[in-house]
Image (cartoon, rainbow, N blue to C red; front, side, top):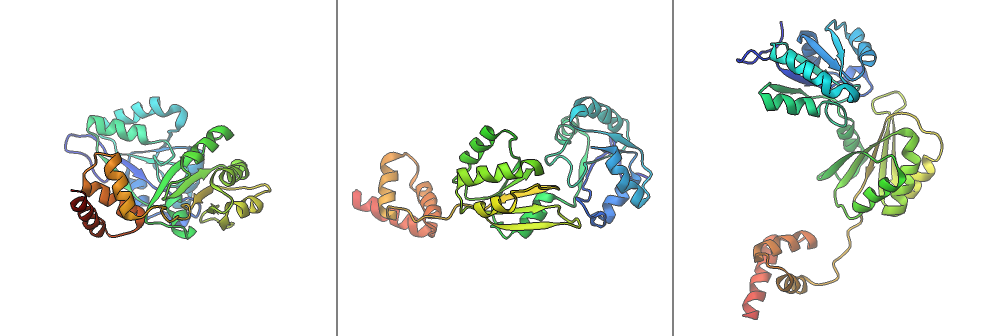
Length: 285
């Protein structure tokens, strides 16, 4: 029996996270859903068949990948409208995250088909959790551009980003990507490279961009997550009072917004900076 059907008679699209390497990482709920749905759409049916055979899942598989995403997506929508429950899986990890699925999810929302996530493995979250770089704020940028010029241009635009940056990268492009990180972001920029997550040859490298270039100069294999730490914070050249004067002269922003911004820049309490701003305003008036 399938898990649920909408009151309108539609089936539900389940986004099921599957292991990124170790087959033991799949959840009991994911296994149940994959066994109960009417159809499973897989990025590569040959790859997914290994998982199905391992757990004795007999649900029919159909291919759903980048180059048939539009046409096959409409077929899946029709199946869902006909009351069938469908699970979407990628080769590894969470569907629709740097993998096919986003267009199908959008289409389902447009026409009122229920969508449910069955959470589980995610390479970017696993890598971030173990890399030892700041995790309070981070930005996932997907795959780095394959061409050198575009890759360097992107890295240059992110030079002053204060969040930890997370990228996926192909093993044959890793050495070139690290050289570009060194060139655009500096030799001492902290990086982490996580390779072959949850597999036998899992590797975590932590060090500077220059050290990473040396470590990965040879042939590299496996799935890669590249993480780049934020630049080292530098002390502002002007005082808070000087910055308040400049911002009041150069912008029309409310005093409260100026105070909040400067509090972040200087690592100070927003209320303290706002009091300083009010005092400065009183002096000038």
